[in-house]
Length: 190
Image (cartoon, rainbow, N blue to C red):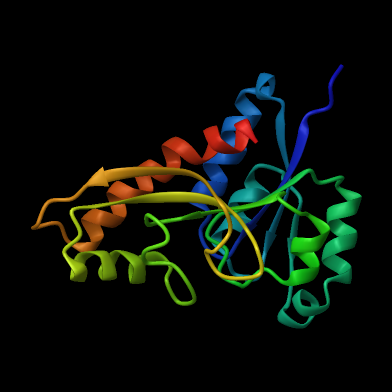
């Protein structure tokens, strides 16, 4: 029997993408993917509660530990992680982690990179910038992670058309639907 690929998800907030990934792969073991650990940089992140409700092990990493990484690397090794999936994780991924998991860390960004990426471009900030620029489309970018915000090689993009009257909230809703419908598919393929 072939072992399922083991995933750790990194989150900072409520974890709607994490929830989709966890539930999808639990309901479809034939996909050969298993989420085995959820890691957050915030002890108050809603995703931790969601993971607890699903009996999924969690780890909270403090800033000092994040910079050094020994505890994190030990946890990833103990859970035999094949792929690290960022799902609304806001800290920059340090070089030691990128080097320990080359082309094994992926992120989803709520815009069509290379536009609207980089430090500070997350969540509503992205959608407000897209709206302010009068863009006619937005979307998602799933990419490998390197040592810089949103600069890793692009794996997948999907776009949605925008109407001139769309607010940042409407754009956010359309983009989130793209995230929920596509992230698990791309992760499964990896």
